[in-house]
Length: 318
Image (tube, one colour):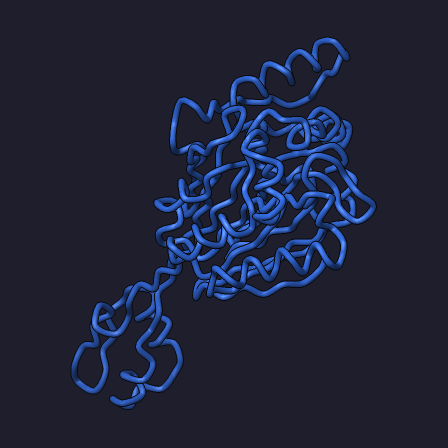
């Protein structure tokens, strides 16, 4: 129901294997997709995916730091040069809009489509469409930072096939009529659609965090969600040495918060370059598994995570 393609998983600076933050979000509802954060080089990663900038419905920026937004002007310029014409929502803190508009003015950037700014500070529901909600949740960082909770819902009419077979009605036009809401005559009686058809609602929700020193703040957002994506910049040992100044999370802090919230799937991203070797990755995994009993993953660039309505996650590579 939700598909997440990681376009950047490094914190602060890119490395040879990892770009800085960017995450593409697709749903079963259609071709429209959403970009969460847009670090420098995001558009290069997008060229390694089948995603089209013409189908991008919104860009959601978690906070104003450069490794989360420096790729925005170039990406939107490329969309314009690709003949995009439909409006685009920029869901972001006000400083991101001010910086983008200044860059747009000073570099003579003319876009053939409207960019509509949605200020995340002024509302909780930042995007709504039939079957889709995106809500923002406040985090704790050196500048205002946010998480986005993306929820998708599908509805379909499901026939009680076993009950129909039990009364001797074979599959065929009568089944289709019942599924379409029509009552059907059968063996001298009338089969009511309401008795043999029921609405099946499938829901999937993922919480996508920005930079944050306190993952426990997302306890409420994680209720009913099947997946949490969150920074794990350091191991706890490194965080203790670095101190509270950077205001980032460790794998342990994140794992403890995810366990307390009961979220069944956890993806670690925004990894410090110091942890991006075999030893560092193993340390992050071990620390997470020591404090979290769900399904934990370390994201790599171009990993694709698919979340179904039952809360199951499958991982492939773009």
